[in-house]
Image 1 (tube, one colour):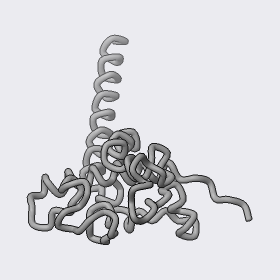
Image 2 (tube, one colour):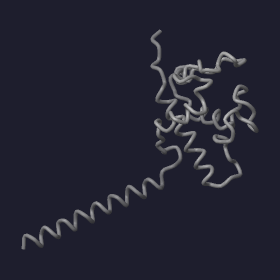
Image 3 (tube, rainbow, N blue to C red):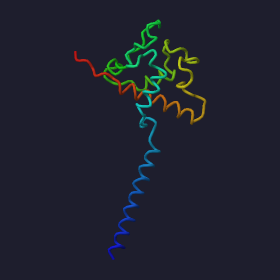
Image 4 (spheres, one colour):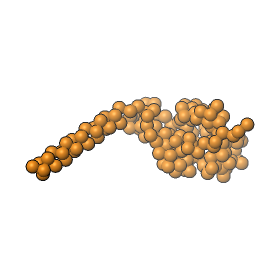
Length: 152
């Protein structure tokens, strides 16, 4: 009798775990793009490849080639501070993907990093998702590197 009760209890626990898993899975697929969680660790590697030569390994605008540029690269650790303490997620994404042009980054048609981050207006959903993920990871890394606000 105890064995039957134990088997029923195990089956019930398994069923409950399955239901919880299904609810979580459905919730995850229904999440909007704004709810995505991106890896700052992956973003750091992307940053090292595409951004550090100008903005510096420490994101402060003093990369290897910064001195050769006509304008000083932005200190990416102070973006939130310069935006009244709010990290400019959308604006940064638009700068990276070319929707908001920055002269030092090159034209939208020929950005300095090629088309890796270029917003694919007329391309497949898979390509748009790939670009969104790469930008999201990069933005997550830059957000994580924000310096604390200086006391005035």
